[in-house]
Image (tube, rainbow, N blue to C red; front, top):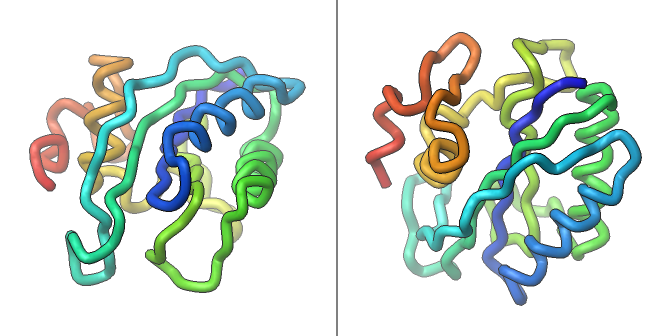
Length: 155
């Protein structure tokens, strides 16, 4: 089994119901056991230039899972769940019905298609805060303990 951390977010539609349904689908996937799910937190939309309150707010949370799947297979499951909930990929950093990001999967992976840990996770308080609420000893390979990362207290 490999421990993985998945960030979840949505800023369109019924955000909470969508995230709950996504967690249920994830937990029903063969080879995936949902270990813990954080409370959902509301955050301002982040765009390439920073926070943007002209877009709908996000609900964000984190799930910790144990899995027998490979990182690529788990990522494919996440993309499938996003697609099932109407996710479109027409605009980078755009509004979305569901966003599921693989933050950590075991240790470090860089194979051209997957980069683990997620390259911007250490900058995102909307990932680090919920994650820290589940695991006070959480760490990002190559970055250190989550509780010591400055993004935990930033916007």
